[in-house]
Image 1: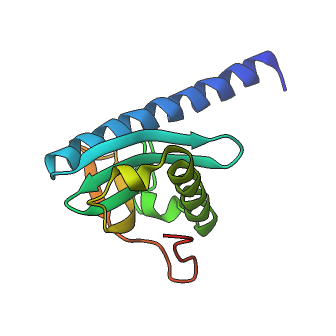
Image 2 (image 1 turned 180 degrees about the vertical axis):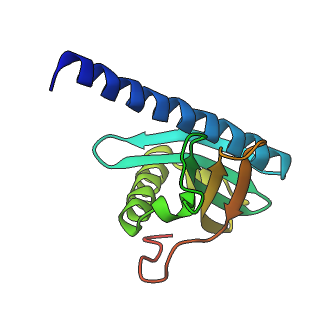
Length: 147
């Protein structure tokens, strides 16, 4: 691959990262306005995965994946919700499980009574961006390990 091709690829990757961070910012702002309290952002476990947002609302812990469609995507039928897989949901649960074990999160949240795996989609093709929140998206065949 030529140097110019590498630069173009790097520019596209950086653009997607910036759009993704912007989408996370919008989603977080929207969720806080709905009464959610942020506990952790960009929770990472090396070689396993990442959870975009961990929030608490009333007595329910929400683990949120933010999916975005950038403003330059031409396909009007593209839906960010289509870009989340079962393997990604499983990785999110593994990250969460390790965080709980490492930090004693469950003991620190005595009011916590349930867990919801959520997806927030941010469609940046609209002005203002269209935000949708899908709660409890975990398919029954995946289940909640140890919760």
